[in-house]
Image 1 (cartoon, helix red, strand yellow):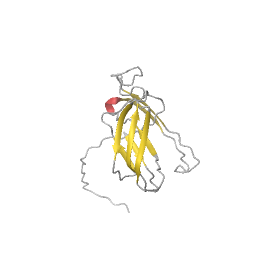
Image 2 (image 1 turned 180 degrees about the horizontal axis):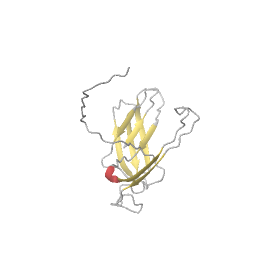
Image 3 (image 1 turned 135 degrees about the horizontal axis):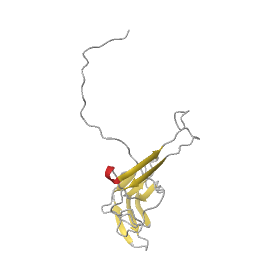
Image 4 (image 1 turned 45 degrees about the horizontal axis):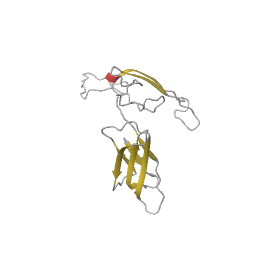
Length: 168
C-alpha cells in the first residue's frame, strides 16, 4: 500500500504528485503519478505488491494552497496481510493498565504485548526462502494490528414467560 498524508490541521495536501519506489540497487521498481487529488490522506493498494523496496521518493508538483510550503505528515509503503483462524497456531495476549484511575492519564504506564505463532507449512516465513513474498521483510518488533472477536449468529431466540412475579 502506498500512503501520502498532508497537513490535516490546515487541510492542505498534495494535488499533483509522483511516488517512485526503488530497489536496493537503485533500480526503479514502480511509479505512481497522481493528478487532481482532493484529499488530505491519499492511499492506494498495490496489486501485485511491490517487494524489495529500499527507497521511495515523493515529488510534489502542485500543492492545495499555492505559495505555501508542502507539509507531509506520513509517507510510506506497507504490505498488508490478514491471517485468520487456519493461519494462527497460537495467540498469547497480555494487556496491563492502571486500574486505580480507570483510565490512562499522562504519566501512567501501559505495557501490552502479543505473541503470535503462524502456520508455516508453505515456508512463507522462512528467512532463507527466496520465493517468499516476504523475503527481506521479516524483522523483529514490527507493528501489527490485531482484531479479536467471535462470530455470532444473526438469529435470536425468543422466550415467553408465563408467570411474572413482581417483588414489592
